Amino acid sequence: MSDNTSSTSPISVHSALETILRGFLTDDAQTLNQTTLINSLGLESVVVLEFVTDVEDHFDINIDLDSLANIQTLNDLAEAVIAQGVE
Image 1 (spheres, helix red, strand yellow):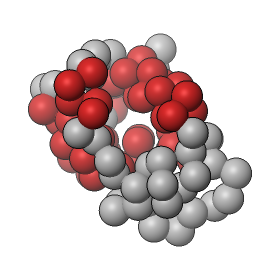
Image 2 (cartoon, helix red, strand yellow):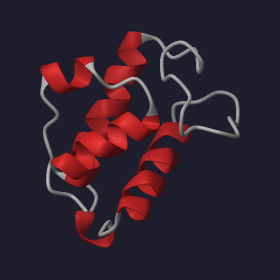
Image 3 (cartoon, helix red, strand yellow):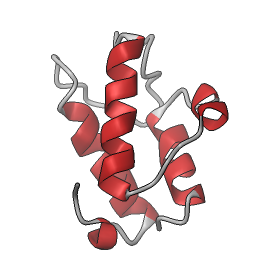
Image 4 (spheres, one colour):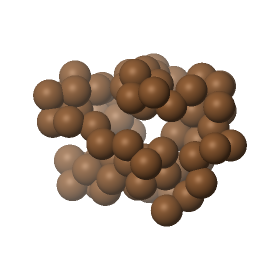
């Protein structure tokens, strides 16, 4: 599990999410902010769940299934992480 103390701002949260997500991509996507994780990036739902698990581990949080259902983009995920108290 990574230390979440270095992620103290929304920009840091977003940067960490991009770094984690790039580990799951086969192509080097240029713009990830508004890209739909499943449709635009071609990630299968199992891969998205693995990605979310890595995010939860990195920030030491738990994203509930109701919140996860509403997450479509990296920005949505960043908002969910910040809502967990990680700033």
